[in-house]
Amino acid sequence: MTTATPNTRQQQRLMQVILAPVISEKSTYVADKHNQIVFRVAQDATKPEIKAAVEFMFSTKDNKLEVESVKVVNVRGKEKRFGQTIGRRNHWKKAYVSLKPGQEINFADQVEAK
Image (cartoon, rainbow, N blue to C red; front, side, top):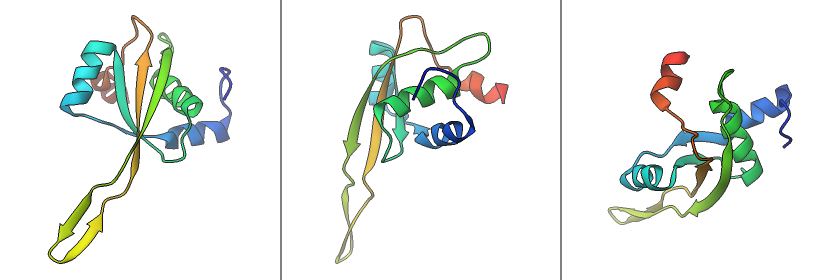
């Protein structure tokens, strides 16, 4: 992905990369301590795609968001029992996105703006 404005096909792909923010005790601790945001991302997403997607989705006209780094974790699905049957939840991918100093993502403002 280039830093230039992505075309329509690239924009569609970037919109599919980030699935949801992960809200947990650990993710709020990491956000406060290390200025990182945790996202659930597509299984086939790469680090450059995740970086481009976050910068594309959360930048505004007057404030360009800059990502410092991306760390990716593959989370294994848990085994669960349903009586005698053993099942497994799906595997998923989690991304820790480090923002440059002074940068911030406020999810409440994003909802109000749209």
